[in-house]
Length: 297
Image (cartoon, rainbow, N blue to C red; front, side, top):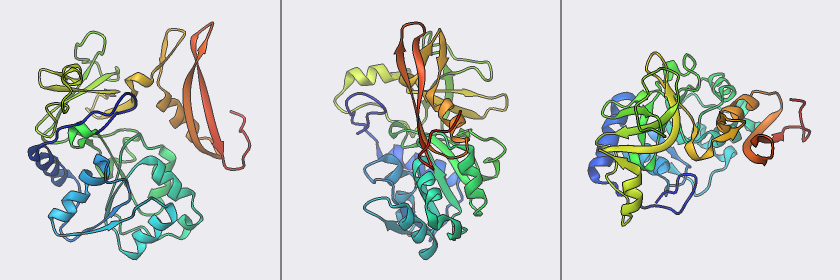
């Protein structure tokens, strides 16, 4: 079951074929090996925690370290103690681990396949983990895509900052104007990301209305806004429903959040739209700072 960012949770019908094709995609690009140890601290009732890597490790006879809850200090300890090779984490988890006092002395070099998804990874986090000998590999997907739709190889992490990579080998993606339904051909122009492939669900469980709304001629409408650069690499900007329209301009909160995260002393940021008589909406940032003071931004 998934609700994305809004609305009632919808049941996603994932076939054995969907799960198998996701595994083929992963095995084609990600450096996972037989006998690997996987750290499972993302909730297993989420597609990322269970299906991104954990199922593959079990099928291939590897080891899984399972924690009932996520604790950043425990995660750092587990990676060193169990020589963890692969893990699926979201940016908030990476950030919490990097903020822990134990991070400075943590031994993380066993991590060969650290996949981060769920939101774009701030550049500062990429640099922090690179300094520890770990390349954060970014991906993008949803429960409906079982879950991988794109992947950015480790060697391109710093060459393409902010990119979620290219489509998986057996998955197609196109950028579509959400208002007209016409495919966007121009590089850098934003639109909704549509996904098609054998890893994509065909319908929602007992919900024909949601199915009709989300699917078009075999394509799944992700609800995520993104763009493709001139070299074919994809970038996710934000959720379509999160977009702020201020003075006729489209502002994507995730882009503002990534910029503010680069400011010294900022630990976390949430950007929202607030009603404004003059502009329709105005952009407001709620910031958590290391020294409990508001920086001058």
